[in-house]
Image (cartoon, rainbow, N blue to C red; front, side, top):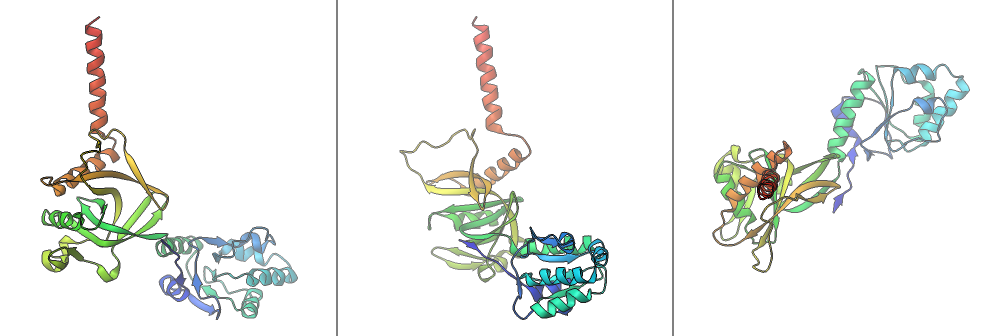
Length: 313
């Protein structure tokens, strides 16, 4: 399930170090990670007005506002503040125009000020809101950092995910989270995984119970979050199933519209799952850098077959 997120306006103000000029009693949160400079609205264009975003006035918008007549300023200020905007930020320590201030008080809207220039405010606001409002889902599994490769192990309960993670930790890798993994989309092609605060650093081992990895193995054995590079699905070995032996066709699982490389690992006694996952992590890293062992073998086989065919002519 995707979580709907909001950012408290006070948290945003504190992070951005903004001065409060007026504060709304009715709108106290931000729901959009995008921002908007209100230059066109100050020119009287309201056909498209993304009123759900934070509104920003830079030097250009501020200067233009005073080129129009006092009547137009009042009209446009009223139209801006009628909209349910989360807040309006006036940059470069400019005084808040009286028309906007009066309209903000009339319609109960928040106006903030900063000494920073517009580009800095935009960058900081976008970075903060992207981090806070990014789409997030919770997925059952174990997330491990295997030599820098974020590997999400999934599969039915009791199949051995946590035990494999424990073996990987003993081999020098790091636990990010067990059981419930919060997955956040931080860009169009990047997912970040972490453990919920409540169960962070804990690992459940059937027959033993809950163990604290940080206490047993030290802080070097844990990691707060990691980009998810690979999904490994553990399933019970089925003699009737024909498993992939070459890996020529890379499979993917889509999470939050992001495609993540996916492999299926059949489980049966005698298989060293920790070593298999270490190998899978190295392999996926090589593929990211353009090398595919299966493709190289396939090409060699084709060349050999063609050479033999030529020799037989």
